[in-house]
Every structure is written in structure tokens, then in C-alpha cells.
Image (tube, rainbow over all chains, first blue to last red; front, side, top):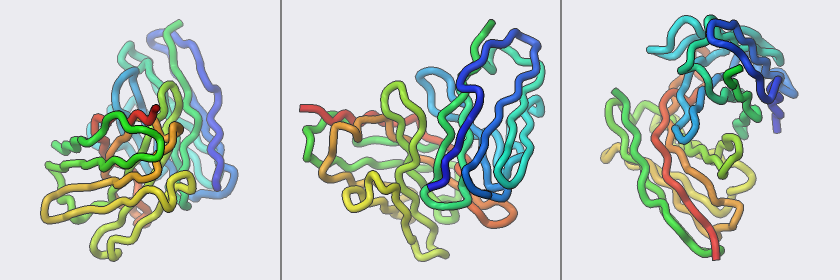
Length: 107
Length: 124
């Protein structure tokens, strides 16, 4: 199975900050990488697919990059509604696998 | 607006069975691959199963942890997805999410939409 490693597992940031989360795959997954946001008690929400393509309705403050094994999610100008847990997932190979999550908290 | 609404969850004893359903609207259901994803209390996301569309002969994929115990199926005429779960274990306790998946430019399928989830509790 492909292991997805996210870092950091948690971070504290202030409103207005720029935040970067990394996700590393244990094997090459080309650009078949998605990012999700989950707020406490809520279902996940899809943000990005194909490493860098925004899902419809997702604000452009979110951006993704990377290919192969190393990927990043960047959130510009962090707002209160952005404080959540973020997950990456590879969809290149079965079984599909998620990273462990990155919890973004308010400093 | 895409809506995915799960039902059928609840409490079941270890070794028991349960069938989850997901009613879809706001999308051309028959075009999409469909997934089940679960989340144990306080834990991360775990992909459970996928069923492809009619063009791909409704073929299925499973996580090793559920293979042989769970069966994913769909009824395109009713825009519905199912997960039949047998031989349930305590570690199957989780929120189960129905998800619809779309193809990217290279025709690899990614999760695009999520249901609100349905809780399955396996306990004696």
C-alpha cells in the first residue's frame, strides 16, 4: 500500500497568515493527489484534485502543487473559517490512502 | 447542488450485519464512480470501497480490512449506493461517508462530493 505522510500533524497560525502543509507519498503517484478540509463534527469537503486543480466553488486562496511523491497545500490569508483539519489522499493506486491529517489551529 | 444522504446506520453487536444506503441527487449518478469512506471516532479518514460505473462494468475495489465482509453495490435506476456489511467487528465502529467520484484529465477518479455521514457502532 502507498503510505501518505503529512507534515506537520498540527500547526498554530494567526488570521492573515500563509500556511503550507506537505504530503509525501511512499511511491510515485504522478499528480493523482487530492486535498480535503474537515471541520469538527462535519463531513469532509473536497478542495483540490490532480494536485493543483481547485474544486468548483473553492476560493483561490487555496492552492496545491507537486507531482511524483511530494505535494503541498498552501492557504493564503488564513481566515477563521479555515481553521480545520486537512487531509491529502492519493487516488493513483488501490487501495486509496489518506494522509494522517494536519490540524490547523488558531494561535 | 449535489446531495448525498446516507441512512441505515446504528448499533449492532459484533458478528452482526448492517446495510448502509446512500441516496444521490443533483448529479448524473450513473456517470460517477462511488465510494465509501469511514472515520473512526477521533481518527483520520479511511477509504473502504469503490464501485465503478456501468461503462466499467460496475467493478469494485475494497480495502483489505473489509474485503470478504463488505459488499458495495449500486442501483443507477434509483440513484442509490449501498454497503452491505457482514461479520462486523468492534473496529468497524465509525462514521461512514458516501462519496461521489469524478474523473480527472487522465481519467483517474477522485472524490468530489461527500455525504453528511452515518454512524455505525459495533458493540456488545
